[in-house]
Length: 114
Image 1: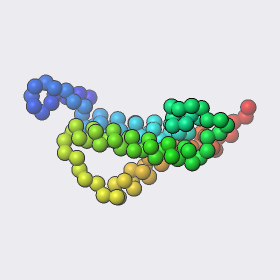
Image 2: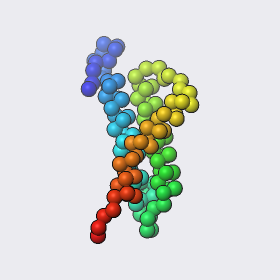
Image 3: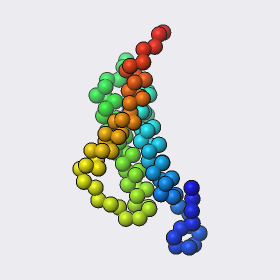
Image 4: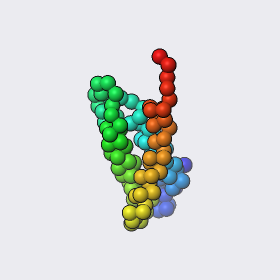
């Protein structure tokens, strides 16, 4: 997971494969967080009653931007940052929504008997 730096001084850095898996895992967790709890902003105060869907979607947008920031930071540490067009952001947002499917199913489609 860690390898010696390219400068030969024994400096360790996270490998590119580990960085990719870290971003994927962070996206999976972040996409499901809004559906896993009743708190505003994931860590804020508890919502009275049920938190509305629009609030969960707004939290997903914020978390998508945070995961994107993490990915940008890791890319910067690995080397030069590649410029991206709108297609990249459309695909990554769609992937983020797809990763949120288990949380959505748990919150809205699984019927529990109390």
